[in-house]
Length: 309
Image (cartoon, rainbow, N blue to C red):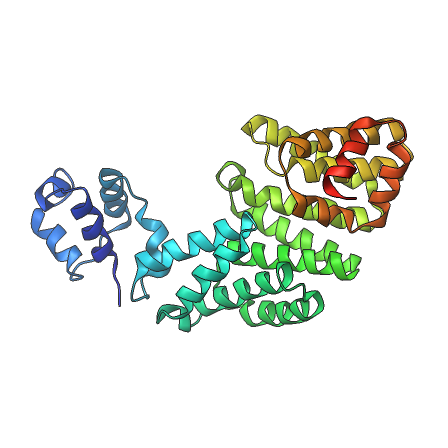
């Protein structure tokens, strides 16, 4: 079983720092030795001071101290989150299969992360939307009081939103999207997890759109465009522009719809993203908008040819 001392020792050795150097003006060298051997537990203040000297936030390791390999578990989970956000499901499947062979991932709560990875693969690669939604509901019920991280629930409810949108459960999609969004904004700083918030906002805009709440789509899109500009970040903007175009088009505001449609297309003519386009093109109203606004527009016609729409 791991303890915080083993992690402190590994980072100290990685920096080729002696115990004396680490302990200076913090505690005795012997106290560092006892901490590293698991015979003493550092106070909260001492843990912060040691972390500052080593350049490590040791508090983020606390959830993994019951693991046999806390450093490895922490790094695996980070990779899970990155691959989910970037929709890199081949890499997610590979690392998840590797993790599943480890002792820690065979036990709860970490085994729940493996199950969630498998559901991501089921949705985005195997296209088994209804089966995934059913299993995802069971997983959420099992983990409701299981001490999982807020990021786990954000990822799970975001995936549920996607499933519901595809199978036509518009009310379920909105409920799941709002749940994910509310969990996130109450627990985390936008700047630190901007990619995850972007993903949730896109899903929420999609849920508002399929429920005919076009003003909410436009409102949420404008709000988050300001966040994007403040952070100088442009990831997933094409999705936001598409949903805003669709919302304006549904409100018969053709000029505004055309403006946001062209913004999305400009992004996608230089950055090839067939998966993104295919997701939006599943909605027949998107093709109708292209038919209507595309008359006489070389840009829209070129876009349709490139993505075979």
